[in-house]
Amino acid sequence: MIIAIKQGVPEEKIRLFAANLEKQGVQVHFSEGVSQTVLGLVGDTADIDADALSAHHLVEKVIRVQEPYKRANRKVRPDDTSVSIAGRDGAVHRIGGGFFGVIAGPCSVETQEQIVSIAQAVKKAGAGFLRGGAFKPRTSPYSFHGLGAKGLDLLLEAKKATGLPIVTELMDMQRLDLFNDVDVIQVGARNMQNFSMLKELGRCKKPILLKRGYAATFTELLMAAEYIMAGGNNDVILCERGIRTFETYTRNTLDISAIPALKRQSHLPVIVDPSHAAGLSWMVPALSKAAVAAGADGVIVEVHDNPEKALCDGEQSITPAAFAELMKTLEKYTELEGKRLA
Image 1 (cartoon, rainbow, N blue to C red):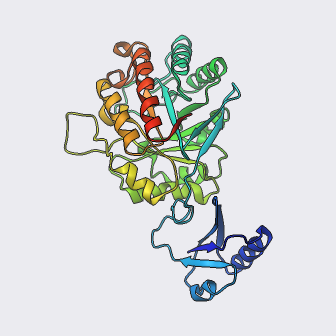
Image 2: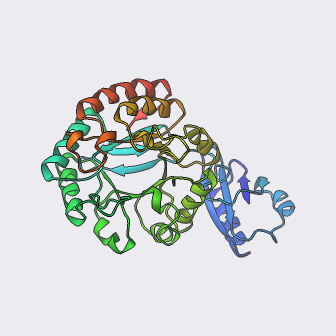
């Protein structure tokens, strides 16, 4: 249930009104927009009299939410959410709310020289975040599975050298303590419905980059986000990374329709992973441009200084030089869409 408060109502009256609602066994989520405050009631609202609420002198209107996701619902928060992360260089990097975030770096951290060199290159080109895998989920048990804790240490060295916030994937909650200095925790496609992990991350005070599962629907992705938000963590970034279809030419099929659909249903920022979507480096620029045109709030791109010798996903990684050209293009496209690179 959503309650839109009339304009001009003092905050103390709204807080008292919300406290009285909570006595009826529901949780009240506050969303303060530019011109109006909206209260989202989460829990069993069946016994709450919507007509009586509508007649209250503080209330403008009452809406019952039919969708199973409440906190992630745009009806609860009409304004776009912006996730902000401060870098070591003093800059504040944002995704959503009119800001277009670019996350770039190698699929896997391999050596100190490699990750620091790539970090410096992508920062120079204009990226706002550094990505890199320390723990890698792989289909084959014989593939390279990352450097583990050592890889995290190398990522932190690259962060120290460049000031860029780092984004890396968590695969096991038992390793969460190793992620204390990580800025954004990524939940991969394979773990999108690992509900015990999502619950724990709801108690985490870090932004979460949530990737869509191979065959997950929009609602399933938003319900996964709801698990995190229900725990109190509202800094969730949704990621469309391609879904599995009958097509075999590309690694996955980028569902470009997911961007406007998710943006219509939810206030959470939506970014695109063109690298995993296609699995082909030459497609990355075109899919990145399509993401901007469709209304995305950012992209996460794989960049490697020597893709042919990469230990993981070299065929979908672009070079630092190609990334620099891509950033020039994205700057033009985001300006046309009224968004700022951040």
